[in-house]
Image (tube, rainbow, N blue to C red):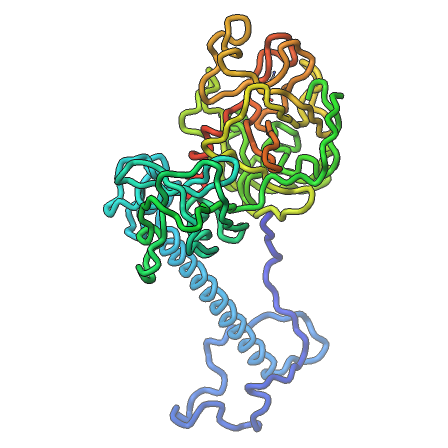
Length: 483
Ligand code: ARG
C-alpha cells in the first residue's frame, strides 16, 4: 500500500457563488445577532486572505467572505469526521476488552477476568477461582460424535442422556469446545450398542441456570438414547472415490474430491499443504511454519483450486495468526502440528469444505485404507506438482514401523506411519501439512498431517504423519482461546 501525498493546497476562484448564510441577507443588514454589539466589524480582521487565481474580473469582497466560511465549514466537517473515528476506535477497544478480556491465547475463567493458558483447561486440576476450567469440560467421543461431559467429582467422562436435550444446549456445548455457534449442525439421540453404566442427565426443574449446573450423574436414562452432537457439517466429499493408483505414484484429483485440501503459499510459491477444519481454521504441520516462515503475513491460503497456475491469478486468503504446537521438536518432529487462523472466513461450497477432526476413542485399524493428497513432488527430488494429486495408503502399526529395519524407534506416539513397505507410493516434499484421511461411518476424518519420511517412496521408508487423534484436544483448546 502506498500513502498518497497530495499537491500543495490551493483555492480555486469560481467567481461568485450564491451562499446560504450571507447571501440571503439584505445588503447592509447587521450579520450579527442582536445580543452582540452592533458596532462589530462587518468583516472580522482575522479572516485569512487567500490568494486566488488571476481573474479577468475584479474579485468582489463577498467572495472572500464566502471562501473563509467554506474553509471553516471544511474544518468543522474534518473535525467531526475525526471525532466519529475516535469514538469508533474507543468503542472497539471497550467492546474488545468486555467481550474478549483474555489476550494472547488465554481462556477466561467464566466472566471473572482471570485468564489461564489452554493447556490448563480441563486438565483435571482446578486453576480458576471458581473452578470453571474443570466444570465445563465437554468432548465428542468415537465415530458417532457422542457428547460426553467430565465430572471432576468422579474424575471420569459421562455420555449425556438425550432426555430433555435440545439444540440450545447443543450450541452451548459446541461453543465450549471452540466452535462458533453459526456452524452448529445438529443434536440427535442415538441408541448405542454398549449400554453405559452412568449418564449425565438434565435436571429440568433446576430453572434457568448454567447448563453444567443442570447436569447430574445418574444410572438411568429413560429414552436409553445418548446425545450425538455435530458442531459443524464436516467430512463430506462431493465426489465418490475411484480407487485408482496412478504425491509419488498418485493420480490427479477432481474438483470437490478433497474439498478440505488447501495450498499454502509464501511469495507466490506453494510451500505446504493444509486441511480446512472450520471457516477460519486450517491445520498444517509445525515444520511448515518454523523460523522465517512463522510470520502470518507472508502466507496466502488457496482453497477450492486444483491448479497451481490458477492460484497465481488469484489473491488467496490472508493469515491472521499461526499457532505451532508448544512441544513441537524440530529434530524428532514430535508434535508436528500447527494451526493457521484466516483473516476472513472461508465460504463453504462443493469444493471448499471442512474435514472432521478425529474424536477421542476412534480406533483406526492397522492396514486401514487412508488417502493422502497434495501438490508435492511426484518423485524424490522433483518439483512441486501443478495439479493436486492423491493416492491411497494403508496405515502401518506403530510397533511395526518402529522395527529395526524400518524407522528403528523414531516413531513417537504423536506420529503415525502410512504407506507401502515395498515403496513406489508415498507423499513427498511439498505434501507436508496436508491431509491423511479415512472414511468411516460415511464421514471423512483427518487421521494425520504429512510430516516426514526418509526420501520418498523408498522401500521400508513409509511416510510419517502427525497423529491427529492426539492433537484434537490441543486444537479445540486453541480454537477456544483464539475465537
Ligand atoms: N517433509 C516433507 C515436506 O515438507 C514431507 C515429506 C514426506 N515424506 C515422505 N517420504 N512421505 O513436504
